[in-house]
Length: 449
Ligand code: FCB
Image (tube, protein in one colour):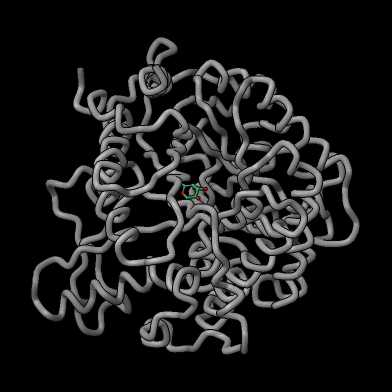
């Protein structure tokens, strides 16, 4: 028996063993059945924004092939599936005019999942903002938060009888920082004030939608998903500890503190050179009690103070002995247990955790119709063991969702990075099970037996 198999008894029978995906990364069919354009449709078609100019027009063609894909998922034996709804499929103009066909697609997805005994968990915002709302300022406009609450309410009214778990936002850090500061993601803005404002209105939209959904269905279980990455100072020197503290604010506390303490970290203006909007009453609204906190974990960071005049941010040090994935991210499974334990001790009012994403990209090779992705299996196995280690320290963790069910459109990196446990041939749309699929299936079976 492997070390991980010995730890499986720590997972309760109710544990959610899942896989995750998101709409723009898998669906394709970007103009079909009345869908409106999103900021990612425009961004990915703008020259120079994505690797090889690739876009999500077809992606995994999941919109047409969902039935085949969900059968594969049944074969995998997962208990849960996390997917996102494309807001512009439901409201092509962002608000008011509802598109019944868009809603119909997600209704069919949910019904098919339930018929396979797989419980759906829905993310409402995984980055594909309706373009019409971006044209009115997007997340820099407070009004977008109200439009989001209306959309959330529509979804819960339509599907809340069958879907009980809802995630408002996926990784608001990416929406704010990558979308509005570095400009690597849609809408491609590069402005510190825009990033800090967008973060605020995304947080507000999370809270307003939580209230609206609860008012519609009291049995809805609501959370938000943050990408969190623990920070280790390179050594105990005062300046490196200080740098690591700042990086922790930047990576984690920028969103954790408002959500669970009702305040922004004092260091935020030091990092961005600007202040968040100071609007009376907002922080109290933002601090809504939640049913769970979704955590996406990929890696941790070792930080040293910046060399003067060289980098605006503390510098990440990866030593040569570190294992790294195809993304260049160091493999640090113990960072996940540290993160979970630290969070549960640091934030008093923090709800139970769900690992909503964890996984790795590697350079997969197809040999005789097989993909022997042993590095991915090792990555997954070490991280699931890290979840067990945190549970052994009394941390309440309700689920683990592997990113990703199948290879897909990896945002600015196009199709160059494969995170799936199902291989996708993008020329033929053929799906091939990787060894990691078979491994995960075996693991889930063992855990549930
Ligand atoms: C996360 C995103 C997800 C995917 C993985 C690799 O930041 O939520 O869509 O791109 O990274």
